[in-house]
Image (cartoon, helix red, strand yellow):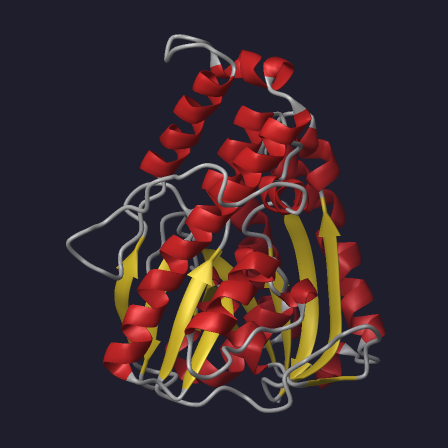
Length: 351
């Protein structure tokens, strides 16, 4: 079965063709990141306009790269949420129109759940991809971490899963972005914090790990505030000193140490919950998914804390892409079948 996937939940316009859920025939991503960088975050209106401009060329390129015609496509899968409503609308309306015009089944996919399915892609002829050789086994414990989501989910099968815990405030990726802003590091925060942390001492500053009644929940708001207070203290100021002025007065080494200490503590928060769940539920596979799964410190800590090496996909498939959408559609099947005449995006869609 060959599925065309479409993903437009945030600032990436993406399309991909995947065969039988595991073989990636094409994967095309057009990002508007550079347009948002000057604003320190994604501007929804800019993202939506970029999707309108790029969606059809990206789909055409995905078909060309896969050496497919519309006759080869068995179904169209699209992200229906969660995400930015303007961005989601472009993808959903495009997928609906194509499903009607090409007489193809339409499959509506949860973006967060789909991140897990990037790890089910095991084969491709596309260059420069390093993929797992086998698909994960059930029961499967998934740590899903990105700029908008931090969740710990136990999958009994493709059709059955239980949400064990999630963030109660900021997602971990969002916390990386906010700490980057405090320390004057460029957007997006994940890569810039990681680069600065490599030059800092993670033990130089002791930061708090939130302790919650549910051991599988996360909280990063207090950690972010702790970084702010430490930064103010390092420059000889109190809590009234504006965070916007900190980048100009923090030294380079202070920024590196703050980045290293924050990253170490944020990752430790994720690892503690994941290890706790792995001990309680004894899954056959532990999967790490989402943009933050590309973080080398997260991979290092998890590799050292879990008895069996967790599963990570290629870094290029950790961030938003349409191959994961097509793969999820294949494995979830009829549960995600949608009406092309009425499907609406849901910006707050839950798992």
